[in-house]
Length: 437
Image (cartoon, rainbow, N blue to C red; front, side):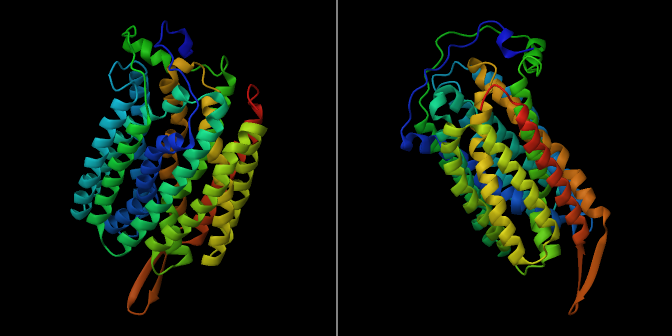
């Protein structure tokens, strides 16, 4: 059932042209969110899991933690997105949820530090879910801001800003956290993450100016709400194909992202794995920031589909490169190429999603359904990826007086081949989107 069949909906926000400064302010919260999750997903979670459980079993445990992490990422947006569509707060529809969710996430980050100090994988996973619950309360509402306020002609530009700020936030997140983690400064690391969360919140709350709803929208039964979440791909095929292709891309991405630190430790055998992971991730993100900014603007002229198709195909090929390299130089070369392709994709991701929404007045609800294309792969990618790495066994070697245990290169190679298949399908199936260029 489409969202347009649910009766009266809130009045649509008047869209307007944004200055570059306003678009930057709008994107600052996204930079802060990516600062935090770049640090957590790329470095901190993997490092703390291995510290708590040891090398053997760490891949499976990390995959399980990632699977649990995705539960609030799937459920919360589907609840909060529609709630924000109908919110009567004087702050507007979106801002109250952005504020509330950010505060929960900041508190959860400090609780994660405590759980890590206790060396408890159960408490660590639980506090991580608190962080993700708060984050998804905020981002479920935040994802409705661009469809609410930004006109179609500026969506590529706005999505480009989101891409650049996303990559910049992640870049600084992994670089700063990599240094702090390698030197054991976990308390300072978590405190910085919580502070960045609140700073991004403050800037974007000032940049987003919403017109509060003047009428209370009609209520819905729980069953009606559940039905409204179903967007029939037969009635809205473009939305269905964009959802599926995004899910495939994210399935490929989240299959290897949590294991980058393990890969550099076990295969490339770098001396400072957290710092090196930060540097390699930084290279990816710098390249992505360049292609991301220009990709968003170009997509307003040539269309989104061509950029998505080419970018996904390139990422699929480059994953095969990661499967065969075992030196830091080879990894860096592959990272630059992957970053350029990834930045081009992510630059049009938000714009393409906004272009195919069934009902602009239910933007946050429909964007929440679209957002599941990113969060559902997190739930299903991590554990199979960890099990695939572990299936190729463990190797041990003597380094001086120390016995070093690690997973094999073959396990990681198999994982990258699987990721290439996902990304290749994402490139191919986008051709079935017909209603937008």
